[in-house]
Amino acid sequence: MRFRPVVLLAVLLLPSCKARSDYEITFSTDRDESLDLFGMTPDSSYFRAYTGDDGTEYGVRWSPDGTTLLYTGWRGGNADVVAFNLERGNIRRLVQGPGYDGSPDWSPDGRHIVFVSDRDGERHLYRTPVDSLDIVQLTGPATVDTSPRWSPDGDLIVFTRSDPESTEQGAIMTMKADGSEVRKLTSGDTFDSLADWSPDGGRIAFHRCVDGACTLWTMRPDGTDERQLVDDEYDNRWPAWSPDGEWIAYTSARDDQTDIYVVRPDGSDMRRVTRWPGRDEAASWRPVPRLPETERTP
Image (cartoon, rainbow, N blue to C red; front, side, top):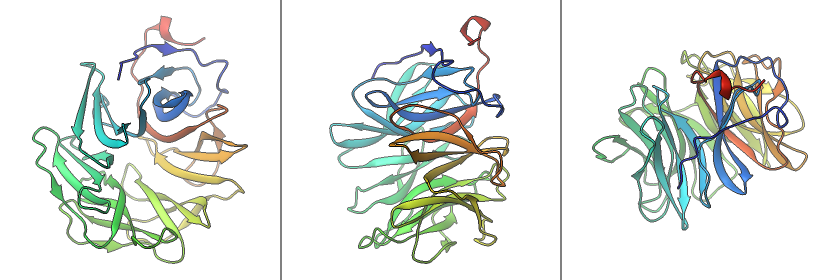
């Protein structure tokens, strides 16, 4: 993989948006044919390519200090957990091997990661310190567990649990960071997945799918007070809270393409962020670095 530090102009690509520009939205896009990682502000005043090669990079998560991208990197049929430190410009495959190691997330202190692996046959959750890679299995063996997200206080991990024999039903679960005290938050004839914590830990956003069509919801961390966030005819997935809690970014499929949108946590003020005739998906947020004035768009 080659490092691409170039900052690109986005005035012709993206519409103006009044959502705050204090934060960057980072996402996977096929602008370079394969899926690579790009970043931009909601008002399109800043646009940047982070990766670009013939592999696939997906599901980015920023380190708490905003210096390192953590994501799933596909190469030769295998998926690895990859860390890209921008300050040092180095890329490190933290967890790798045959099969799937991916969907990672950071602990709030940046010292550990949780990730999904099929190293024992089914996809389960594992955690490891970033520096020592002392991998510990958290879930298994009779279920499929995916999409982990660490709570802001570091106490809990929210994730999706499904039956290996069914792709139609999935539940949002929580557990302690050591894998204990597993609790089921949602249940029914739906596939609930891709949960994300609000910055204060008071709400969880997730998508709920029925017959392949998904909508966005939020709930309290105990599973109560479910509220539908976006109610339209489109397929909406992958919610991600902004660091200040004022916005939720998500992926919406419409007109044979997927784009990034933002909406207020109460479902109001929905805005389209990207307009690419292809795939813009799986958004994450980070504080935007201060840019020299010569690198800002007009």
